View 1: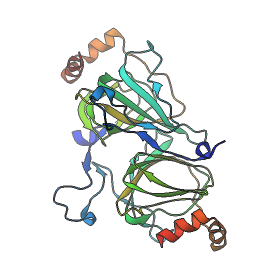
View 2 (view 1 turned 45 degrees about the horizontal axis):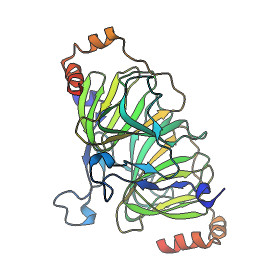
View 3 (view 1 turned 60 degrees about the horizontal axis):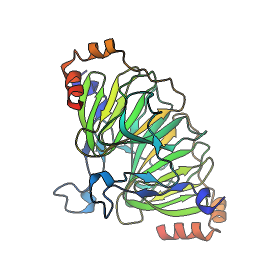
Length: 168
Length: 168
């Protein structure tokens, strides 16, 4: 094991707006030494767009995990609900979030709590990358997607209808 | 319960370098709507200096807590060890950390893992406020302080001796 592998410290190794980047699309986003950049979910498993996942802490001694999700402009997480809860901190940029029947603009470093069985989604609707930290129990249930009927019912809320309309 | 209390979203409400601040000492640091600014520990319980604590997520549904600690320039956390581990992200500024026998300069958003029963301390040695997020199990053991004999033994490491010398 090398000195670097042995270390408990993982340096941040890439940042937004790095020198020489000629456009937003060449922005590498936040990365950490030794932390893999992962697909958000298995492709086709659920609707999502232009979002990546990095697992910052996942250890047998910790009963939670800390993940970092980053969306490119126009990207979004899956609209879903589950029994497990999320403790979220907006980490980069600004965007829109839906939690239950509440739709809000949020910006770093706002905090968002996702209660049990509460529909939620994050959207990078502000023309900039939008990233958040998410603390979650290591043991958790599988997310549920809305049925077409549930989605139609949810869209009876003007706030939720407007949230989805903005994205389309 | 008011609309604001009902919300799952807590806006960040104060930032570093606010307009009109005439010196570093008037810097309010990071604060969140509805999150109390707490003493780091009970005064006199253990050695620490110029450090505050805010509990960002502490919920019965989450098996971990997320806290934010911020040190004024020259401040430091307690030098201690315990069975429970910490998942730390440097959130603001830069400073020094000691983890086991490793002393490193760290800066936002570096990651630091504190393994079980490993001596550790954070120091705001760079003349600027230094803050970190800390994920920890909700159930945890009481921190241990070093005995004078243990401290003398630890200072046989040149890196650790230099770490403490810098602070004095």
